[in-house]
Length: 519
Image (cartoon, rainbow, N blue to C red; front, side, top):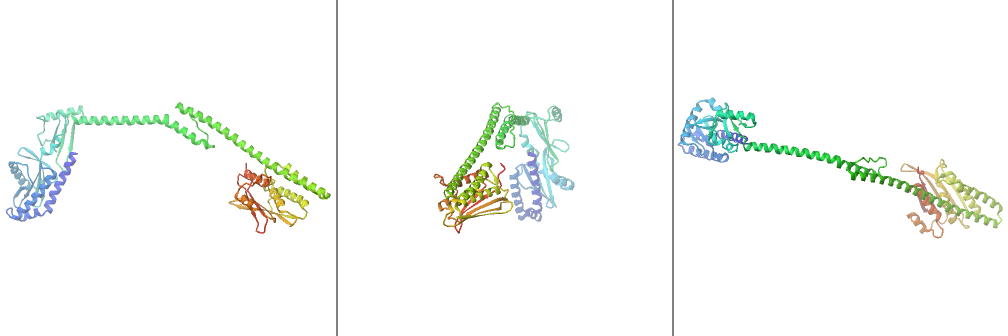
């Protein structure tokens, strides 16, 4: 650090002296006038002020001089610490140096040691035509900051030239270190290394040599090595502890956490690895047992739900079947009272076919064609009862006979049309239309049942369109509500039923049925 600072100081001072010679007006004025002229004196005073400021920044140990060869003028340009005899000796040497251009070039290129009155100095001479600026610093002053370092009991520091010769008289504890002592130091350094430190200045013909006598410097180095070694040991120990902690604690906890996250992923088997942590191993076993119990519970709950739905559907069917059976018996009784024997025979045969279809069919889905035929039989039975009170028409596109629908769905709404629309006053027309549409790339069967009767009552229609349940306390509306619940259970809420009244009068029910679910 010290050498780098001195190198920066040398570089700046040399640059400043060169710039002053080439650009400063004071030097130019001094070259034009004689030393006795007022202009010369004024310019010299300004130059003295400038280098005094430079000296304050870099230290009083730096001495600055100017030499003008034409006027044979040599004077210090800043306060100097040289004694007058040393000053005269320096002046004499500068005069001799100027005569040798090669020597001036050498002193300009490198900061070099010189000997004045048994004292060593470091000098740099910057020439510019017939003008020269000189910077001089005592070797003792230059090396003094390094001499203040504690290098041990016999530690020394000195400046040496390129030939290895000392350019100051180094002393330690009042004793002069000789070449013999230095050789001893070299032998000692072979036994105990790092006892000699060399440092070379840039753009200088000398260097620094430090002989360290195992003092504070070595203690600091040993302490640094111990601290670094301790830091490495602590880091390695920490890494080992973290690795051990990761294997024995973090990894088992992560596996346990992964098992928890995979609980809802039925497609992935649970990996319950054996852990070295007893608590986690016990938790794993309990968790595995809990999973097995949950799976069994889910299966049982699902089967119970299916059984409940199956019982509910069967109950709905049983609610529908006796209701119509009683109506048929009532119709036959009415015909017998009126001695309508042929009609009784036809009614009995139609009723027999009707109930044969109902009691033989225990499936959740039947062919649409069979359901249409069943509805046609029902309407024929009702025509025997009501004579010419209504007519019916069934319209069906081709290819729809094999469409599967729940049984008795159409009959429920046909019964309502016959019950609420047919009267002895006006002839009513009942119409059944079967079609097919595409909705969001899904094929739907559309069955529209309409009549020309009075239509739905406003309060009933409002509840049906808003999804509210109808009142069944008096045994009414059982068929409609059962049918709607059956469609929700069988199609998983995918089937839709739309209720409305036609503009010309009459009720209209539109049923949208997708393909039956695979389950």
